[in-house]
Length: 334
Ligand code: PEP
Ligand code: MG
Image (cartoon, rainbow, N blue to C red; front, side, top):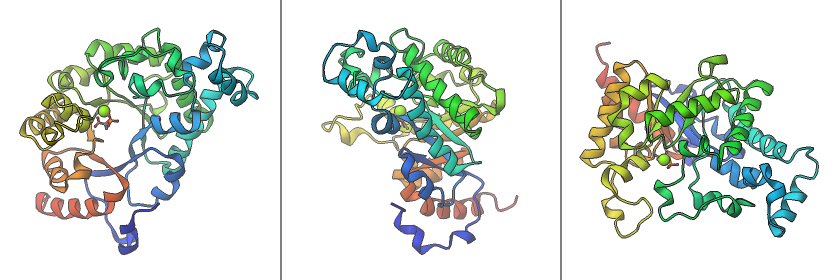
């Protein structure tokens, strides 16, 4: 559904702000409609929606199909993958289709695809997933993000994700696709993921491939200089960053009142990483919900000099108009 505001504004007459206004997109079927909003591309295309609704099967269940226990899941997988000579082709085709739909809708603007960032309990919900996922007490800070991609428990699944992105870029010609890595805990881990991607044919800098990391863990801010050496830039994940800076579980209702992106500690972390990225001449954006939730937070980020805001679709027009107004005052003399 197209956000209601679209009817009230003459889109032709909106100039572009200096700060890029991008969008968060999950559902490939909405991408074409959303692309008509004034925008500078997609700052966060989440794989999770596509995996849940298009692919539906856990990649490791396809890789190790023969090992799978007899039962409902196995029957479903046989049915769903009937026409594929190799079961893993099913995963690559469905995922590349979903990613391709988003990238094509916004072409030639950048579409930053984030590699899978389910928690283990969520991966387990995919068909066949339960046989391949550990049960964790704290999935939110568990086997998640970058740590999965080079770990033998998921490495072959990650290779399929890389193949799907390669297919969307090289077979469909959608070179506007860029990549983002979630939950990179250490610099070492960042290097491992970059090497793993290269092994799977996705080399940073080749054919215009940019690789970003989410900045969503305090270590990412503290060691921002070091991370700048290995990635093309950051997108701030203010949802997780707030959780981890304040030590508040995003999903706990009891402490929900303490979860606030506008807390001074979170803002200082964000100012710090923006400053470092700019010093190092790396790109810095945000794709967490803070600027979508609070107009004053979007303003704070623009004042700090952020390059792009990736927003939920329903606030794109309103925020664009606010930022245009703010920038008029900020850059009056230039
Ligand atoms: C974030 O952490 O801010 C983010 C955008 O990622 P997710 O909400 O998917 O963890
Ligand atoms: Mg996150």
